[in-house]
Image 1 (cartoon, rainbow, N blue to C red):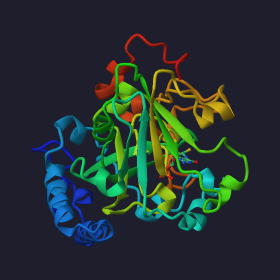
Image 2: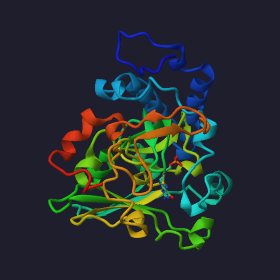
Image 3: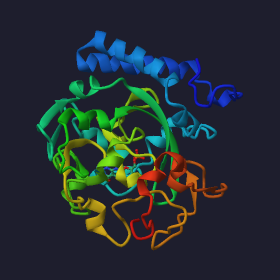
Amino acid sequence: MLILNKPMGTDIPSSQITPEAIYQERRLFFKSLGIAAGSMAFLAATARQSLAGMTALPDFMRANNHLSDALTPFKHITSYNNYYEFGTSKSDPAEYAHTLKTDPWSITIEGEVAKPITLSLDDILKLAPLEERIYRLRCVEGWSMVVPWVGIPLSALLKKANPNGNAKYVELISVQRPSEMVGQRSNILDWPYNEGLRLDEAMHPLTIMAVGLYGKVLPNQNGAPIRLVVPWKYGFKSAKAIVKIKLTEKMPVTSWMKANSNEYGFYANVNPEVDHPRWSQATERGIGDGFLSKRRKTEMFNGYAKEVESLYRGMDLRRYF
Ligand code: MTE
């Protein structure tokens, strides 16, 4: 069983062949999702489409899936996290995030739309076939990981609510439940966690809402049941456990901009040439690599320059960081 990670016609190294165990887990994921959603037939069809969909990814996505790099092991992706709702240490989310109840779940889409709408997770999963997208997530702190996400394009959700002519930005708002999220009992950030994108960034085919990783249902510490993934931006843009999406005319002020606008800008595009005020962004280290390992060079737009640089043509990326 191959996941087609490279352009056709090139040799596929053995590291890119999906081990049987992972493939079986992937089937289990779809099965368990089916039970949770109470619609086995639909999800079986979704699973088939999604597996077929992997081979049907547009070439540019396949070529830029960073698959020359090994996938980050599941245990690292799920034990070294930023999720301040559960504490500020990297190990807090894995320890405490199980207290968040992720079922039932819904997302309300409102603001500059033709019709505000509330969609259950089941409704959302019916909007588009699930796809596996292997993306690098580059954190502003200088570490990165390569993750096989499972999700659907954010554009599928936005289209459902029909943005009107005033809509220029998209605000994504995480859940606020201090009784279930121990970190929200302190004011380390302005809760609820919110993030924002320009409408064209939100509609870009690379921008997804993830519901799984490694073929499994998304673990709570990674943002279950549904989180944003924008692969060309620093990880903090990818808000977790989203309950509300607001279309707005004005640029939203995000939690990190409120916390420190000199250090965290609205755009947050991965850019090795624009340093964070307190450290360089030129290189990065994979999580779990160890401090003695060689750092890799950070790529412009995290390796997606070809696909997204046209969104920023003529903009001063130092000013709009
Ligand atoms: N979303 C919420 N709601 N709360 C958070 O603290 N942290 C962000 C982002 N999304 C965060 C969040 C940061 S700083 C990063 S780097 C990524 O989640 C980390 O995602 P991961 O834990 O899946 O690696």
